[in-house]
Image 1 (tube, rainbow, N blue to C red):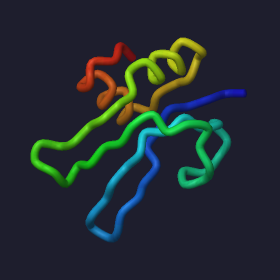
Image 2 (cartoon, rainbow, N blue to C red):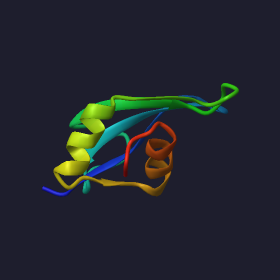
Image 3 (cartoon, rainbow, N blue to C red):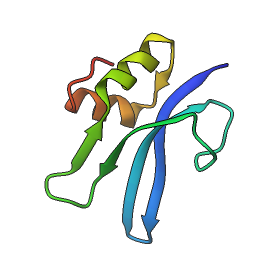
Image 4 (spheres, rainbow, N blue to C red):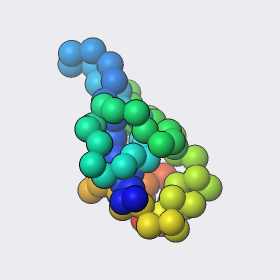
Length: 81
């Protein structure tokens, strides 16, 4: 199974809130994730990023591919992507 780490959108119109999730690559953006490993709130100043580092490193070690946006967030939170 090809896994990917990506953002899942929540919130209302013009007030986005994202969860960082591990999903099957073939699933839609808002379908059920395998695991939620963090969240990202871009509307706060500064942007609020929370990542479970040990779970992110585990999934990266098993071959999960982060999306470009998630790769940037992981680097900002101190996880080697």
